[in-house]
Image (cartoon, rainbow, N blue to C red; front, side, top):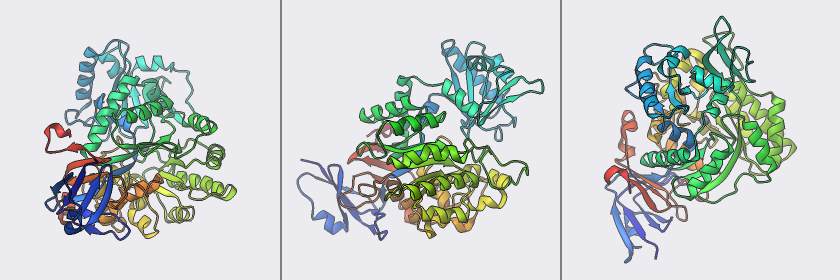
Length: 540
Ligand SMILES: [Zn+2]
């Protein structure tokens, strides 16, 4: 007999069609069987029921993070974090690397991530020479916070066969001194190739997934759309680790990689499978490419030059013909298509492809996506609407990187991640963190969507803010829609999967400034409590 939970006296934000807020919910097995008043729910009470008093706190559908890199985040947890409080200067970082070198076998990688030359006291990158002085026995890679740039030591350059004569890879740059010597700084594709070289073992990946999944559960995330990582081996480990229960969230796996995604896309389309294969725990998502650079780099590809540099239009990886050639067959063969497209020129390019796909090979319900869609100019939103495109914006970027956006993109920053424009156009934009590029905490993303405040308090495009209820919908139902699963999850309605989150207060009563402090009391996935704040260490 399936156990029945009757959750009463709550502020239950159902995210149903009418945005109803009710008092109570009944869960049986892995399904929600009813939602409504305390009275109606209590009529379901039987010998197998456990009644739980929510004490007026908010119950919501589990958060769906529609663009997150679980493997990257998890492996970051195994690496040195430059975002840690204890690293304020380059010297602090070098000390950490030295400690790590002592416990790392010779020849194995030492990896650090989250570096930001703007926030470190020295206001620059460490040099290759500084890294060489710490250890000559290990390759070292320090990835920038954007995930598109890194600095490495001489050992790593040797491993990658990069010397003074090595040409820049397509879409990438090996930074050089005046004398033509590689400085160790690698940009875009040059970084991506090095990052792939510094790969993790299968056991390391599983450990990483387990850590990451527990962290996500602690913040109320019950489904993730994985935005790819280290390639096809990574896809296999994602599926295996979900099956083993090391990853507790439901996974919608985009197909691609941080490096050389085009080969994987081609290969997978030829393999004869397509988007939607799998079950409610693990599903094959869209094929994904990278079209341009990062919003904070700043390296996004823009139609007009940067406000901060009138000669800079950013960086892009492909021609229109190349994108069409990869994506039109994918669309024709039943794949949802998507790409990282941050600048308005990149979004434009992806929309061109989507328009051709829908025109030449019409099929129903394609829901092609655009990851980030950073500079979402009004004309681009119009075209998204016409093509039934689902954009996946990241309002939390405004918090961490918003001041830089204003500096680099000027007026354009006011319509970056414009949640209210999407709402007005009735486009089901699904909020995502893009963790580890920024904090995965959904309450942080909700606060950013509601306030559009940068970390220094600057409000960027006030007319693009949305209400708390809207933001919750964008973090739940819209995410389910983006993976064709709005019939089974994303709201609290009878028949849907029991993926639920209890917050530690009434969110409707919370002040906007306090939203990032709202905690998760427990997280339920598939009818099972997978995180419980009141239990030791949060383990259920
Ligand atoms: Zn991403």
